[in-house]
Length: 168
Image (tube, rainbow, N blue to C red):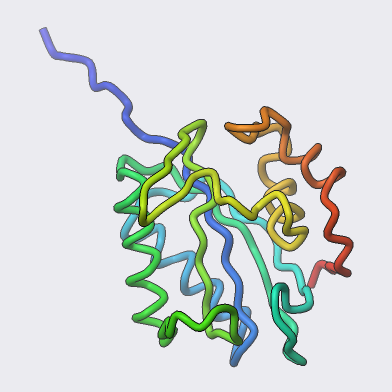
């Protein structure tokens, strides 16, 4: 008798952003590389334009959210995201926010809560960022934040960030 396979895939959600160069192409490439290295696509939101967040820049961002099914552990997913950023030309200097070719943040891995020196899940600032919540609500409006228990749609409604975000 054949053993039935246990599905160990979890839904992992990423935020993708770019405000340098061909922003659309960079987001698409990052999404494809995440799928290639980390799992299979479940959903990808549309693209949204937003102002910089956390620092001043004249360059608008394009943002999107990608959800994939993956068997990888959260720390491994984060490492893959960092490797893709570096491969695409992003070099973190530790001096805070700045313009970037690509930014990939791991937001959620289903209902997991992680407090590790290298990774905190859910992403600690996702609920403060309209540019994250709007595309995430487009693809997973009923997904619940593992700490607050609120749906992504509800987090978007209650978000104090009133930045102008527009679909592109």
